[in-house]
Length: 298
Image (cartoon, rainbow, N blue to C red; front, side, top):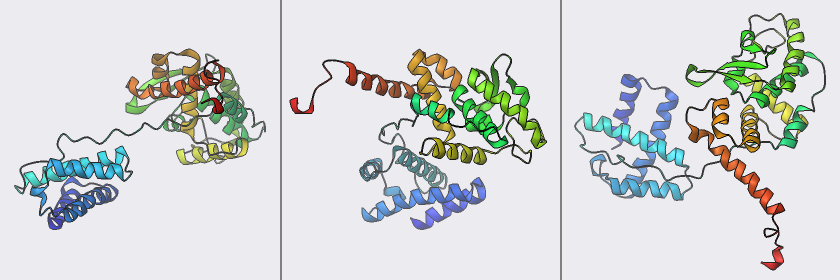
Protein backbone atom coordinates (compact mmCIF):
# COMPACT_ATOMS: atom_id res chain seq x y z
CA UNK A 1 0.00 0.00 0.00
CA UNK A 2 2.80 2.36 0.90
CA UNK A 3 4.53 1.75 -2.43
CA UNK A 4 1.39 2.73 -4.33
CA UNK A 5 1.01 5.79 -2.13
CA UNK A 6 4.62 6.78 -2.91
CA UNK A 7 3.90 6.39 -6.63
CA UNK A 8 0.81 8.60 -6.29
CA UNK A 9 2.83 11.33 -4.54
CA UNK A 10 5.44 11.21 -7.33
CA UNK A 11 2.58 11.55 -9.83
CA UNK A 12 1.25 14.59 -7.95
CA UNK A 13 4.67 16.22 -7.87
CA UNK A 14 5.71 15.52 -11.45
CA UNK A 15 2.51 15.37 -13.52
CA UNK A 16 0.12 17.51 -11.49
CA UNK A 17 2.90 19.82 -10.25
CA UNK A 18 1.27 20.44 -6.89
CA UNK A 19 3.19 22.63 -4.44
CA UNK A 20 5.38 21.00 -1.75
CA UNK A 21 3.03 22.40 0.91
CA UNK A 22 -0.06 20.81 -0.71
CA UNK A 23 1.80 17.54 -1.29
CA UNK A 24 2.80 17.39 2.37
CA UNK A 25 -0.83 17.96 3.44
CA UNK A 26 -2.05 15.19 1.08
CA UNK A 27 0.58 12.79 2.36
CA UNK A 28 -0.23 13.58 5.99
CA UNK A 29 -3.94 12.86 5.42
CA UNK A 30 -3.32 9.69 3.44
CA UNK A 31 -0.88 8.44 6.10
CA UNK A 32 -3.82 8.52 8.53
CA UNK A 33 -5.75 6.25 6.16
CA UNK A 34 -2.69 4.00 5.82
CA UNK A 35 -2.35 3.73 9.63
CA UNK A 36 -6.07 2.92 9.93
CA UNK A 37 -5.75 0.14 7.33
CA UNK A 38 -2.75 -1.35 9.16
CA UNK A 39 -4.62 -1.30 12.46
CA UNK A 40 -7.75 -2.87 10.94
CA UNK A 41 -5.71 -5.48 8.97
CA UNK A 42 -6.97 -4.18 5.63
CA UNK A 43 -4.53 -5.77 3.14
CA UNK A 44 -4.64 -3.26 0.29
CA UNK A 45 -6.33 -0.23 -1.26
CA UNK A 46 -8.71 -2.51 -3.19
CA UNK A 47 -9.97 -3.94 0.11
CA UNK A 48 -10.84 -0.57 1.69
CA UNK A 49 -14.61 -0.17 1.28
CA UNK A 50 -17.10 2.59 2.07
CA UNK A 51 -18.15 1.00 5.39
CA UNK A 52 -14.55 1.04 6.65
CA UNK A 53 -14.09 4.57 5.35
CA UNK A 54 -17.21 5.67 7.21
CA UNK A 55 -15.76 4.04 10.34
CA UNK A 56 -12.54 6.04 9.94
CA UNK A 57 -14.47 9.30 9.49
CA UNK A 58 -16.49 8.59 12.63
CA UNK A 59 -13.32 7.80 14.60
CA UNK A 60 -11.58 11.00 13.48
CA UNK A 61 -14.66 13.02 14.40
CA UNK A 62 -14.73 11.47 17.88
CA UNK A 63 -11.05 12.33 18.28
CA UNK A 64 -11.94 15.99 17.77
CA UNK A 65 -10.88 16.43 14.13
CA UNK A 66 -12.68 19.40 12.59
CA UNK A 67 -15.23 18.98 9.83
CA UNK A 68 -12.89 20.90 7.51
CA UNK A 69 -9.95 18.56 8.24
CA UNK A 70 -12.08 15.48 7.55
CA UNK A 71 -13.37 17.03 4.30
CA UNK A 72 -9.76 17.58 3.20
CA UNK A 73 -8.87 13.96 4.03
CA UNK A 74 -11.85 12.67 2.01
CA UNK A 75 -10.77 14.85 -0.90
CA UNK A 76 -7.25 13.35 -0.70
CA UNK A 77 -8.71 9.82 -0.69
CA UNK A 78 -10.84 10.59 -3.77
CA UNK A 79 -7.75 11.89 -5.56
CA UNK A 80 -5.77 8.77 -4.66
CA UNK A 81 -8.53 6.43 -5.90
CA UNK A 82 -8.94 8.39 -9.10
CA UNK A 83 -5.26 7.65 -9.73
CA UNK A 84 -5.53 3.97 -8.64
CA UNK A 85 -8.55 3.40 -10.90
CA UNK A 86 -6.74 5.02 -13.82
CA UNK A 87 -3.75 2.73 -13.23
CA UNK A 88 -6.03 -0.33 -13.14
CA UNK A 89 -5.18 -1.09 -9.49
CA UNK A 90 -8.75 -0.55 -8.21
CA UNK A 91 -12.24 -0.17 -9.62
CA UNK A 92 -13.99 1.73 -6.81
CA UNK A 93 -13.74 4.81 -4.59
CA UNK A 94 -14.56 4.25 -0.90
CA UNK A 95 -14.91 7.99 -0.29
CA UNK A 96 -17.51 8.48 -3.01
CA UNK A 97 -20.67 10.00 -1.52
CA UNK A 98 -19.16 10.38 1.96
CA UNK A 99 -19.39 13.77 3.63
CA UNK A 100 -17.74 14.95 6.85
CA UNK A 101 -19.95 15.28 9.94
CA UNK A 102 -21.41 18.75 10.19
CA UNK A 103 -19.32 20.70 12.62
CA UNK A 104 -20.60 23.56 14.73
CA UNK A 105 -20.26 26.80 12.82
CA UNK A 106 -17.82 28.97 14.66
CA UNK A 107 -19.29 32.42 15.03
CA UNK A 108 -16.99 35.24 13.98
CA UNK A 109 -15.47 37.23 16.81
CA UNK A 110 -16.74 40.78 16.99
CA UNK A 111 -16.38 43.88 19.14
CA UNK A 112 -19.55 45.19 20.73
CA UNK A 113 -20.45 48.79 19.87
CA UNK A 114 -18.94 50.19 23.08
CA UNK A 115 -15.61 48.45 22.45
CA UNK A 116 -15.61 49.60 18.81
CA UNK A 117 -16.08 53.21 19.94
CA UNK A 118 -13.39 52.79 22.59
CA UNK A 119 -10.97 51.62 19.89
CA UNK A 120 -11.80 54.38 17.41
CA UNK A 121 -11.89 57.22 19.90
CA UNK A 122 -8.65 56.20 21.57
CA UNK A 123 -6.16 57.34 18.92
CA UNK A 124 -6.00 61.13 18.99
CA UNK A 125 -2.34 61.82 18.09
CA UNK A 126 -1.74 63.88 14.97
CA UNK A 127 1.54 62.43 13.66
CA UNK A 128 1.96 60.57 10.36
CA UNK A 129 1.50 57.01 11.70
CA UNK A 130 -1.37 57.88 14.04
CA UNK A 131 -3.32 59.68 11.27
CA UNK A 132 -2.79 56.80 8.88
CA UNK A 133 -3.68 54.08 11.38
CA UNK A 134 -6.82 55.96 12.48
CA UNK A 135 -7.97 56.18 8.84
CA UNK A 136 -7.32 52.42 8.39
CA UNK A 137 -9.34 51.49 11.50
CA UNK A 138 -12.20 53.85 10.65
CA UNK A 139 -12.44 52.58 7.07
CA UNK A 140 -12.41 48.91 8.10
CA UNK A 141 -15.24 49.51 10.57
CA UNK A 142 -17.18 52.05 8.48
CA UNK A 143 -17.30 50.10 5.22
CA UNK A 144 -16.53 46.47 6.13
CA UNK A 145 -13.61 46.07 3.74
CA UNK A 146 -11.59 42.88 3.45
CA UNK A 147 -7.87 43.20 4.19
CA UNK A 148 -6.99 42.63 0.50
CA UNK A 149 -9.49 45.32 -0.56
CA UNK A 150 -8.03 47.92 1.77
CA UNK A 151 -4.44 46.98 0.85
CA UNK A 152 -5.16 47.40 -2.88
CA UNK A 153 -7.02 50.70 -2.51
CA UNK A 154 -5.93 53.55 -4.83
CA UNK A 155 -6.77 57.25 -4.64
CA UNK A 156 -9.12 57.20 -7.66
CA UNK A 157 -11.33 54.68 -5.83
CA UNK A 158 -12.11 57.21 -3.09
CA UNK A 159 -14.86 59.79 -3.52
CA UNK A 160 -14.87 61.58 -0.19
CA UNK A 161 -17.11 64.39 -1.43
CA UNK A 162 -19.95 61.90 -1.90
CA UNK A 163 -18.74 59.59 0.87
CA UNK A 164 -18.11 56.57 -1.37
CA UNK A 165 -15.34 54.04 -1.97
CA UNK A 166 -15.13 51.58 -4.87
CA UNK A 167 -13.39 48.31 -3.99
CA UNK A 168 -12.21 45.34 -5.99
CA UNK A 169 -13.38 42.23 -4.16
CA UNK A 170 -13.18 38.47 -4.61
CA UNK A 171 -13.47 37.24 -8.19
CA UNK A 172 -12.46 40.72 -9.42
CA UNK A 173 -15.97 42.01 -8.67
CA UNK A 174 -16.23 45.70 -7.88
CA UNK A 175 -18.71 47.20 -5.45
CA UNK A 176 -19.33 50.75 -4.27
CA UNK A 177 -19.63 51.27 -0.52
CA UNK A 178 -20.67 54.22 1.65
CA UNK A 179 -17.99 55.80 3.84
CA UNK A 180 -19.30 57.14 7.15
CA UNK A 181 -18.73 60.68 8.42
CA UNK A 182 -16.03 59.75 10.95
CA UNK A 183 -14.16 57.62 8.42
CA UNK A 184 -14.36 60.44 5.88
CA UNK A 185 -12.88 62.88 8.37
CA UNK A 186 -10.09 60.44 9.27
CA UNK A 187 -9.29 59.85 5.58
CA UNK A 188 -9.20 63.59 4.85
CA UNK A 189 -6.80 64.14 7.76
CA UNK A 190 -4.62 61.24 6.55
CA UNK A 191 -4.52 62.37 2.91
CA UNK A 192 -3.28 65.78 4.05
CA UNK A 193 -0.15 64.20 5.60
CA UNK A 194 0.24 61.30 3.14
CA UNK A 195 2.16 63.53 0.71
CA UNK A 196 4.96 63.93 3.29
CA UNK A 197 6.10 60.39 2.40
CA UNK A 198 6.53 61.22 -1.32
CA UNK A 199 4.32 58.27 -2.36
CA UNK A 200 5.69 56.05 -5.13
CA UNK A 201 2.22 55.44 -6.61
CA UNK A 202 -1.50 56.11 -6.00
CA UNK A 203 -1.84 53.74 -3.03
CA UNK A 204 -4.11 55.26 -0.39
CA UNK A 205 -2.15 53.76 2.50
CA UNK A 206 1.64 54.08 2.33
CA UNK A 207 4.61 53.62 4.63
CA UNK A 208 6.91 56.43 5.75
CA UNK A 209 9.10 55.44 2.78
CA UNK A 210 6.21 56.10 0.41
CA UNK A 211 5.59 52.46 -0.57
CA UNK A 212 2.18 50.76 -0.47
CA UNK A 213 1.43 49.14 2.87
CA UNK A 214 1.22 45.35 2.53
CA UNK A 215 -1.30 43.06 4.27
CA UNK A 216 1.16 41.99 6.97
CA UNK A 217 2.02 45.59 7.89
CA UNK A 218 -1.67 46.51 8.16
CA UNK A 219 -2.38 43.44 10.30
CA UNK A 220 0.44 44.43 12.65
CA UNK A 221 -0.84 48.03 12.97
CA UNK A 222 -4.40 46.82 13.71
CA UNK A 223 -3.04 44.33 16.24
CA UNK A 224 -1.02 47.08 17.97
CA UNK A 225 -4.11 49.33 18.16
CA UNK A 226 -6.13 46.50 19.74
CA UNK A 227 -3.48 45.87 22.37
CA UNK A 228 -3.03 49.58 23.10
CA UNK A 229 -6.68 50.67 23.25
CA UNK A 230 -8.53 47.48 24.24
CA UNK A 231 -5.91 45.20 25.76
CA UNK A 232 -6.93 42.41 23.38
CA UNK A 233 -5.95 40.74 20.13
CA UNK A 234 -7.52 42.47 17.12
CA UNK A 235 -7.34 41.66 13.43
CA UNK A 236 -8.84 43.36 10.35
CA UNK A 237 -11.50 40.70 9.82
CA UNK A 238 -12.82 41.31 13.35
CA UNK A 239 -13.58 44.90 12.32
CA UNK A 240 -15.35 43.61 9.18
CA UNK A 241 -17.37 41.18 11.33
CA UNK A 242 -18.22 43.98 13.76
CA UNK A 243 -19.36 46.20 10.88
CA UNK A 244 -21.66 43.44 9.62
CA UNK A 245 -23.17 42.41 12.95
CA UNK A 246 -23.77 46.00 14.14
CA UNK A 247 -25.40 46.90 10.82
CA UNK A 248 -27.63 43.83 10.89
CA UNK A 249 -28.50 44.47 14.54
CA UNK A 250 -29.77 47.95 13.63
CA UNK A 251 -31.28 47.37 10.18
CA UNK A 252 -32.38 43.69 10.13
CA UNK A 253 -31.73 43.87 6.35
CA UNK A 254 -29.76 40.73 5.49
CA UNK A 255 -29.74 41.41 1.72
CA UNK A 256 -28.26 44.88 2.21
CA UNK A 257 -25.53 43.48 4.48
CA UNK A 258 -24.81 40.79 1.86
CA UNK A 259 -24.35 43.48 -0.81
CA UNK A 260 -22.13 45.61 1.40
CA UNK A 261 -19.90 42.68 2.36
CA UNK A 262 -19.67 41.46 -1.25
CA UNK A 263 -20.83 37.92 -0.41
CA UNK A 264 -21.76 35.93 -3.52
CA UNK A 265 -23.96 33.60 -1.43
CA UNK A 266 -26.37 34.88 1.21
CA UNK A 267 -25.65 31.74 3.27
CA UNK A 268 -22.25 33.27 4.07
CA UNK A 269 -23.99 36.38 5.39
CA UNK A 270 -26.51 34.38 7.39
CA UNK A 271 -23.93 33.52 10.03
CA UNK A 272 -24.39 37.10 11.27
CA UNK A 273 -28.03 36.33 12.02
CA UNK A 274 -26.71 33.87 14.64
CA UNK A 275 -24.65 36.66 16.16
CA UNK A 276 -27.68 38.92 16.10
CA UNK A 277 -29.74 36.20 17.77
CA UNK A 278 -27.13 35.93 20.52
CA UNK A 279 -27.56 39.66 21.13
CA UNK A 280 -31.37 39.38 21.12
CA UNK A 281 -31.22 36.40 23.48
CA UNK A 282 -29.05 38.31 25.95
CA UNK A 283 -31.47 41.29 25.79
CA UNK A 284 -34.37 38.88 26.39
CA UNK A 285 -32.62 37.24 29.34
CA UNK A 286 -31.93 40.58 30.98
CA UNK A 287 -35.28 42.27 30.22
CA UNK A 288 -38.09 39.71 30.06
CA UNK A 289 -39.87 39.26 33.41
CA UNK A 290 -40.26 35.51 32.89
CA UNK A 291 -36.56 35.15 32.02
CA UNK A 292 -35.40 36.77 35.25
CA UNK A 293 -35.17 33.68 37.37
CA UNK A 294 -32.80 33.29 40.26
CA UNK A 295 -30.59 30.23 40.26
CA UNK A 296 -32.10 29.18 43.62
CA UNK A 297 -35.61 28.92 42.20
CA UNK A 298 -34.62 26.44 39.52
